[in-house]
Length: 260
Image (tube, rainbow, N blue to C red):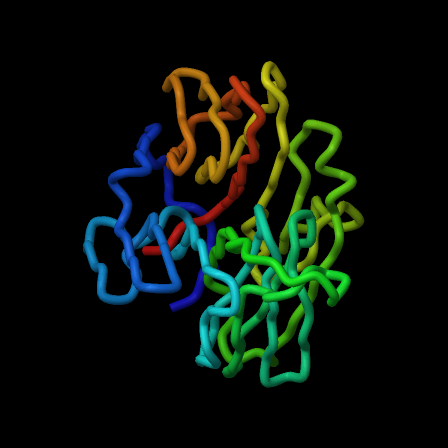
């Protein structure tokens, strides 16, 4: 299955608000994970994706713990850290620490092994800490299967200070030269924004938009308030305004196609 082709003809306009408490949840000793879509043992055939976004997992991992080495294939995986730091290692030789304001993309392609763990040390490597790491991991299908695995990261924290939507990860030509790291899907772009109370942004005018509020609270034009963990799946709605009602971080996928 690939994410190629144009968007379906004239899909109906809709806004589907999904509340935080409606999400699937996985809770074990070291992990508190909330799943916006069907994931792992949690399956609902009516909730598998929006546009080309298949996974939107909101994870909190305790210090010194995390996901041991495991495989992925034919998926574009974007990780966005909100608090703490996350250590990444993979079978292509890439390793590093992901922290707030650093965008990271892993292209699984023909197959890749990787691990993700809470960094048990501060970024300077000296001061031990007991902080959890909070991050959102998002998966989209690539345009083409069987490509060479890849990895990219980019510091864009400074761009987020301006209170506007910033391209984080994109395969769309219109964002070439912008802040975005590249993903292998020419119909999709992830945007992020850090907003103070009263700040307003306009969502992209795309056939499919997924708005997620990992921290804070906003008002979505025409739909009302969204709080931490809430999401809205927009289809053919035009560019709706989002207004922060407290300090907030949002993630918005702009998508110009969907899965069958």
